[in-house]
Figure 1 (tube, rainbow, N blue to C red):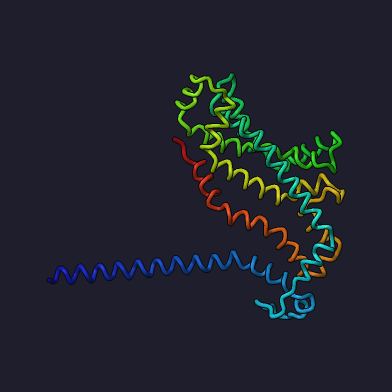
Figure 2 (cartoon, rainbow, N blue to C red; figure 1 turned 60 degrees about the horizontal axis):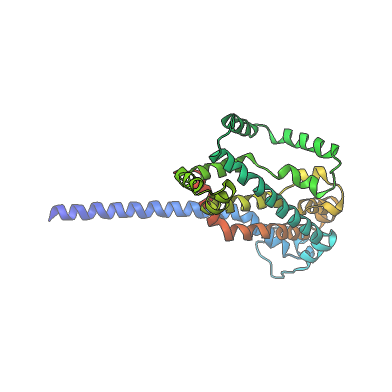
Length: 291
């Protein structure tokens, strides 16, 4: 009887410790989530405040009783933000499509084909990842300028049509597919391209979708390269538009309208991430496993 009571006391203490531990963990996670999300909340809140109400706040308010959409209208009329959205969509779609057309065959070649110097070439590719991005931007700028491609979509797109990291990630996934499938396909007379499209791409679809989503986000957030290679409004992206709003004085004076522009640009990426976040996690986790 005493042993049973002792066991129940020990079990109760253990249960209490587990509850306290979970409570502390969830508390700190909640605090961290609020810390991370608060800037986004403040950005959205500010975008709905009127210009006069925002300027009248000597002490910032964490809510507004008179929300307005005028800031969004002002943001799209201060600069041709709609045109910049279209340019960014064209840039993103073309860059992503061309990159996939490059990295999928490259990853297949490094994972399945045998050719002289393959390991040396791939090692050289990986070594390129060690080069600082600033140096690459300088050489790309000189090359595009010498080719006369400044202020063109080709100049915007060409430096971004490949990625060593994505080739590596996809190669690791392709190597996780049993080689016996490839040998069996070759015995049946299947061409390399048909095997790639019919077998490897469908099996590695989660990783390919992840790469596409990450590339879309990367293109949409592009800032430094578009600023360097374009000074013609006809080729401005949304990142250029935000900077233009700020530089023309409108964004510095009308902070709510500036926040409205930032929210408008951020919403597509947030929606994409919320829709495909499971695919992103699945693709990245597959990239870290083999076999």
